[in-house]
Amino acid sequence: MDDPQEAWLPITESRNGNVATAVFHLLSSGIGIQALLLPVAFATLGWGWGAISLSLAFTWQLYTIWILVQLHEPIPGIRTRYSRYLQLAIAAFGPKLGKLLAIFPVMYLSGSTCIMLIIKGAGVMELLFKLMCEGGATCDAKSLTGAEWFLVFTCMAIALAQRPNLNSIAGFSLVGAISAIGYCTLIWALPISKDRPSGVSYDSRKGGSSMAGMFEVLNAIGIIVLAFRGHNLVLEIQGTLPSSLTNPSKRTMWRGVSVSYIIIAMCQFPLAIAGFWAYGNKIPSNGGMLTAFMQFHGHDTSRFAKGLVYLLVVINCLTSFQIYAMPVFDNLEFRYISMKNRRCPWWVRIGFRLFFGGLAFFIAVALPFLPSLAPLVGGITLPLTLAYPCFMWILIKKPHQKGHDALWCLNLGLGCLGIVLSVLLVVAAAWNLAIKGLHASFFKPL
Image: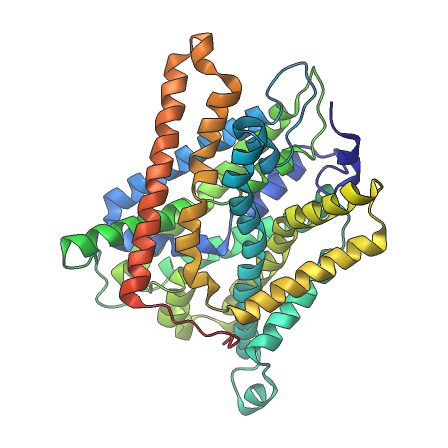
């Protein structure tokens, strides 16, 4: 049976969700600004290997989501629900190993995603401001500093973050899903409606030496794999759904996953293919499609269209902040409830949200170069998406004891491959930082 304290925590306080709310949450958490880098990966891998890698990554991560959905209530008839990734990891690997393997990736993918949303959202907010006043003298005189833009974004995000539980932010997730679909579509539809830049080539831009070329291929694969996000929130989203013996939550959740990932595929595949067609190997490595579009087609695109793209990105960053911050809020309130053995009062709940917002703002100002470390730390956390679910399926379901040897081999193989891929991506990201350098500017946000 569920712990009675589950009804006091933000993630599981309300279990009145449905297929629609699950779709909204999955889209809001699953589509992000990192998808705009997909054509950069194609510039290294080329048409064939780029399309194959994107298809394989999509299938692999969809399979691991299916595993997580099944493991949310692993034993029929026993009403144990693992509504948090860390809970499932502890159940599968044991208390010590489960915490060791999962606590850093889960906290990183929640907390640091919010920090990077502050950095990216505030940067695009500044671009939107400059576009609206056309960069004149008045605009420059009234423009805020980088830290001030971070503060504006953080205040807006925390003001929205006062909803009590995950189920109550379904409206924000709907707005976030619409905005993400909107800018992902506009950012490839607008360029293909215009002339391509002169000199566009589709030749691979891999480095000259075999070692450099290998690491650039790995970095490109990393961009594709890390474009799919949100695995650390799948169990939490499923935890908002009602469940019974006749209608377990996994049925509702899988319907939501099926609908949402059809939409995600319709966003990301055209973005990667059309973006590479429009810009070829001219696409900038930093910023991807957003930078390329403004650089090559900004002069012949209306202010309204450019402003709409910027606005949709800002809205998506604000709404994504809500769902990615929820596990942090849940963990803070869990600490309070464990000590006091009572529901968290409203003023303490507000205090926790203000504390997290202030901490995230401070780290964003102190480490404005954090997005450049995303490939490195993303490689470290990759097993949470591609490997751990496979191992957890083996440990909890024990398919080899039930005569399902093929399923056991499949999960073992995918799990081991995920670990190897994680190591290779970390090495490639470290090599890239060593060659190109890390332009660290502490407490100097642009």
